[in-house]
Length: 632
Figure 1 (cartoon, rainbow, N blue to C red):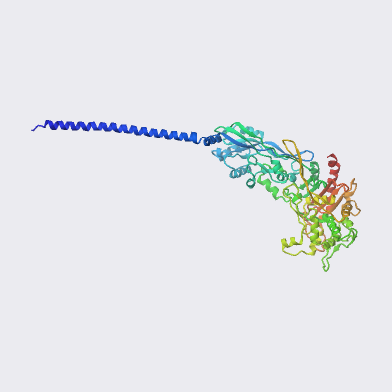
Figure 2: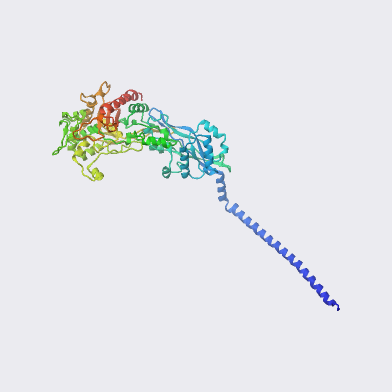
């Protein structure tokens, strides 16, 4: 057995030793490199963080400071107080009452359905409340309070307040709610406010109504919305992370709306409404010299308080579908044949155009026929009136006189003259929703029906029937114009506005719509003399109302047909349902020497104007001259 060489053994040992030493060195080298790499990474991260901090703290300082302030500071709108409405004596007709409202911010509620159920167990919440709440959610921006219940009672407020911490997103807020202390009295004139709907939101300036829940819907409330609403204020508040207000940083107070003072005397209004109670009708009383509306009645009426915070569907349907139409303002929207009430104006047209002289007499046998025609146009008095002048034709309301006069005038001249007295177009009364009535012409019929105008239609228009339509407020204005001998004043419900802060009164502007200049001023005396005879003459159609009068009244009765009567048939109201009875009308002014009041009364299906409408007008004029005018 041979032995290993010493030299070879030495080399092998040296080689193994070298291999072991290289591994340790490489391990050290690797560790050093890892440490260096980590150091570089850490340095880079630090540099990046320093750069980011520099960007945030220096370069973007203003931007993020603003965002931070917005999280901490909020600008909240402050609703203005709506202006009040008073009558001419300072009696408040519309005011604001403190009211508690239950409101919810849906975005802060985890389970809205469960919350609503829980709230229903605490207080009374109707289905209409829930429907209104869900409708409002669809059109309200996020994180805005949505009302659920209005006018909480003190007991309900107390019950909710002790558990309010259990209902996140639920708030009880004190607000001012519109209230009409007299209820139905003057309701159609005042109108009402209601919650802003989606259509109104689209046309309103959001900044002006950002904190407002109500807007005028009808009547004076709507017409004078800009004056009554006021100007929104704001406050800048500091809040915590939960949105609770810590302090107010800045505040700009809202400007309250202006107060309105009406020409209306609420005692006269109440008295007139009582006289028309149970009837479908209207009454408008005007101060001729100024155009001030003393009373504006439409019956039946409604309580405007029902509409302030929303009306349940059942009640609204009862009002809307009622045959009596209590929501319909007959005084400014009811368009009726004026009947014989326009005869004094038609007679004036005959004098002005030279078609008749005041003393010219017309034979009335009780009917009138056009040349070469067999059809008879009946007078209300079948036996006729005999020979009548203009004065007598007004006193006795002779239809035949005005058939003949209208035929000689022609429809276009008749229409032109009637329109000068405010008929056939809106009177510009300061209340929303007025309709303009209709005074027809040949051209109108051609446009409307595509047919020619017939002479018989002119005759019927001459006694206020056929196509002729007028509203009660138009009849009152035309009567006031007669009383003032041609000076037509714009009818105004509001005569004064008041700055609620500075207590400064500002009269509203009233304009003269027209001054009718007749060729002979004595024509006014002829027309007014005939109207005086209606009340004070021995054959006047309203002579019963002239008894025991302490003043002189000029008036004119009117009866407007609702159904057509055959040529030789007689009108028998007893055989007809009341809805087919004639409308009763009466217009008047007094005293004749210095007119203080002009009035128009309409009673739907009331029958005769002399028996139904005239007594109402007489009592209203008596009350005004004896009770109201003397004390004002």
